[in-house]
Length: 284
Ligand code: NDP
Image (tube, rainbow, N blue to C red; front, side):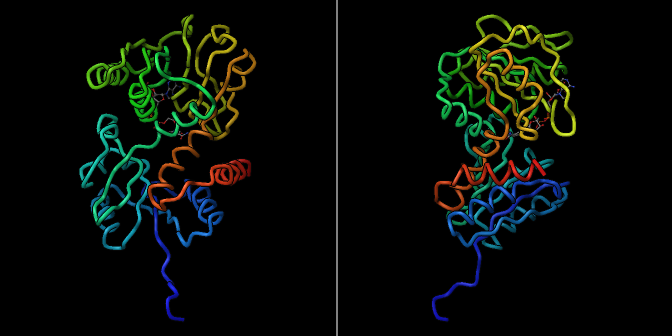
């Protein structure tokens, strides 16, 4: 069969542990929808093997890869190029190859921003409260700052982590950031435009809620949760009951995947198909 290619284009995921990561379902649903001969391979990469795994992307002609726990920070040292925002965040979750070189991006915060913008939410000049100061909060707050948010208040249980992220935002971005130690039931200040739940509270099978006074969520406030599974967390349900405009973590997850998809394939991702595939997976 002259001209026929028996080789699939390859993209992958590096993580450890990684067996339970469902990203393959979302990305391969997108490949299938567009009729692309691409495969997304979930790979167990132990921390000591990360360097050789990144080098292997070149040797095996991969189009790129995602990085998840525990590689998002360590991978920076092995890449040829790192996007400016990923450098500030200090973490990379998406690698793509161009002209034989590796490029690192962080799409977590970008996916969050895309979700808000598609929902008609403006970020410029807004006052934002973020619960949490871990990796997700870092990616989200740096992108919010780049999108010209006016003020970001970080609320975190661990003071050291909260203060470190506050300092990064104040020193490396234009935003004004402040820190509140989360050792009490937090009252969302009047005048807050956007409230972001960026802790791991509420991730399946946990169904608890962050310790805030839900009466301080006002009608019309934009309230977001990073937790993708379940999409309707108790936090989202309570915010909705207060009349807030809510954004769930499933939308954020699909939108971050959509950015990688476009970098690897050069095609616009079929977002709705990918979202439905992931929602079905989570429902099972
Ligand atoms: P990290 O471990 O880096 O950070 C966890 C954060 O949650 C910390 O701020 C931690 O506070 C806080 N936290 C955890 N438990 C509690 C608690 N009981 N009370 C108060 N604060 C708490 O995790 P990540 O930031 O990487 O991930 C957080 C969540 O974001 C995960 O559940 C993940 O599924 C989700 N996520 C979703 C994405 C999406 O696309 N939808 C993308 C990336 C992540 P402290 O510092 O005090 O320990």
